Image (cartoon, rainbow, N blue to C red; front, side, top):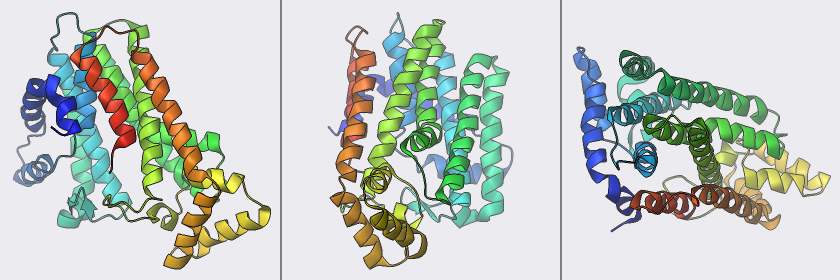
Length: 326
């Protein structure tokens, strides 16, 4: 059994029912929209986000059961996450998503933007129509932070002078906030304990931080991960290994490296040299240490909970984030 199947095992029934409910939550009277949403549903990814919602909810639930609010929370997260992916592909002018054509590649940008808006509104209405205002607040904060994180990254990338703290703020908002809201939502759907909800939110945030650093590291490895090596350098994205290298080298090396990224990022040989430079300056080792730190902090938050298959799956999930190959 592969690791994702193992993680999913204790919530298999919930995930199957969730898929039905999620598909229903997208339905529209417009045939074009239904055609596109059908395409989206059939090209789903690993579904990590709804898995977090159900695993946290079941770990915290006294009766070992989840309720309709948990299903709605998972659907809302997935609707809004999907909306952001559709919009991201337009923003990045990307033609592929998970090995398939993106919505904008098949139906053009105008339709892709409108589909993203539609999915976002369906998510908001699913909460409002059922009075889940507490869940809606958690998700709305995540949407705001994701937009801020993306814009902060764009603003800082122009100058290539990011310090580590700013980098953490960017990835906390851009990546970690959505995983944090999944865990907070799962908790909130079964518990009114604000301290518990906050603890699970922080747990998700720490996993999200580790997840993004792992993504950064992929840019420097030669493994076949579906993302060519050096793509972040070509896109002038500041990643943790690069930030560390720039902060731990001579002024001459620093100006060479920044000049390479700004003016020679299409030159394959030069990009390779930058990758080697980052490795030589221990950028990868440092990023791996930081990633492990976030991982350990996340695991420590689970210690006090009684043992259960759901807790085991969450521990597996934290470790999978670090050990995954793509």
